[in-house]
Length: 142
Image (cartoon, rainbow, N blue to C red):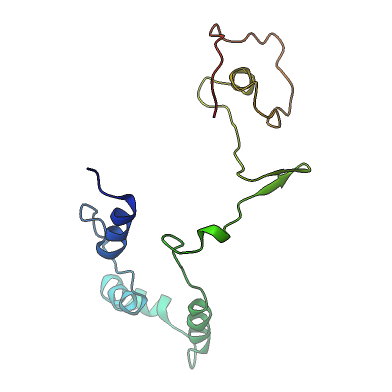
C-alpha cells in the first residue's frame, strides 16, 4: 500500500529529501556571514559586509527581517475556515478554475467539449472558420 501523502510530507519537513543535493552554502543567516568571509577573501568581504560607524543600519535591517515569518499552511486545523471563492465580472465562484488553451487546443475546441459548462471563459467569441473536432460524443465533465 502506498504511503499516506500527509506522512510523506511530514517526513520531508522533518528530514528533508534524502536524494536531494545539499546546497553549498548554509541557510542559517548566522553562519552565512562566516562562510562568505572564507569564500570571498578579506578585501571583497570587507567591501560588501561593512556597516558604517556603529552598524546601526545593519542592525535595523536584521530587526526588520525578523518581523517576517514563513509559516507552512500544510497540516493545520484551519481548512474549514479557508475561503478561496472569487467574484469575476459580478459572478461568484466557490472554486475558481480558469480554462486556458493547452497545446493544440483552443478556447473554441474546449468550449465544444465543455458546452454544458459555464461560458464565462469565452471572451473573444468564436474564430472565423471554426470547425469542431470530428469527435461528437458528449464528455462528462463532472
